[in-house]
Length: 249
Image (cartoon, rainbow, N blue to C red):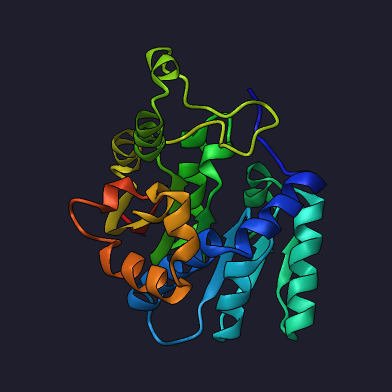
């Protein structure tokens, strides 16, 4: 298995996701968590595998100095266009995570790594690199595809044959991630390098709603309720993604 990068088809699909409730909820939770955790001053920010630039642009709009990295050219160009249209600038680097230590000379106040680990052949291998790229006293914003939520979704759908075979990865050309992460395993891998300071679930109920209820729900109500329940002890672990804000040890 190799790391998965994104082609034009996946890029167009990602645009559709961010145009709907799923993307709006994801951004709202990530932004709320970061607003709560970060100091009110400009930071040097590194976004690894930044996709189409939604989070990076939000950070640039708040006065942060952003370095944006992305291995897939269609994604990188989409981010460049998004920044240009908004009248903001960033440093853009087309490179996989394995090449970043050779190109970046100083660690960053904030490192963003959202929806990256689940597309890697060896997700744990990036963790020491993230640590080296984060300043002492800095922050890592880590969001990843939650294996628990995928299992629960399959159980609700009655996909028992799949569960008996322990099949959770997406097909080769699927946009279901190839390596959904077990949060307990990830917590063990982070130990010794990172202290997890906050944990939120991203889409703790939306993706489980019947389609007809999703269609009737107002976006403002969905955002309000997702934000209100993102850290609820009974619901946070059901988030389709989990967002952990970590501090280096």
